[in-house]
Length: 242
Image 1 (cartoon, helix red, strand yellow):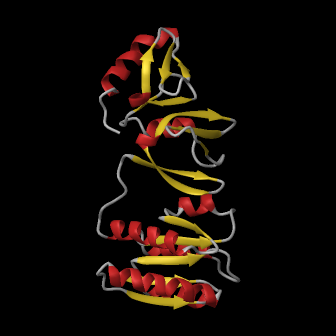
Image 2 (image 1 turned 90 degrees about the vertical axis):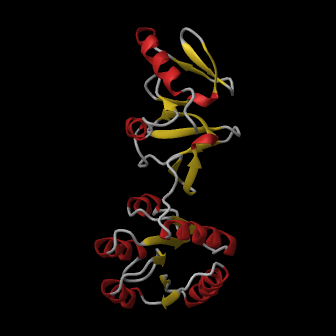
Image 3 (image 1 turned 120 degrees about the horizontal axis):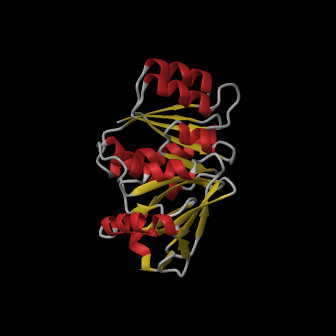
């Protein structure tokens, strides 16, 4: 597995390198790791060589990590990209470039190892399960299992994920619209009974004439004119696995 690390901070690159090498060793992976502390030199490398894994700092002088990733995507659609940064300003761009992970600095070895574990899954040809969705928030990009979501609502151009745990997860405004999310999840355990809502049918406690009552107690409206259509769709989905 060919891996490239690029960070203009030498100390950080030397912190990341042994973690990657040790991970490859303990995982039984034959790995070849190259380290660059100059993004312009790194640009030459990624233009000439295809790597399996790219671990990139985002904020660097000259060419930043986002710009490097754009060049990577021109040459390598399947390369795995992990971003490292101390800035919260690049989540949307990182997501649009199909980055696998967005790790905040200072780098935590445990977080990096978890990202590497995911990278190996992708490298071995096992894509992210269909029962997960990636959500961009102000604090990072999260992969959320359907089984942890009770329902989703749209509010002021943001999507609010109501989790089974009671936690609320709020997307950034540029993440995706409710209509896009409804389309994305149309073949899953989620149902849209009313504009601005998506419910996980596995967390419906019972159905009343005008609403779904969720296990958390939330009442999700059902328009009278479309009750029978919505209920029929609910019955089809209610045995859908998470």
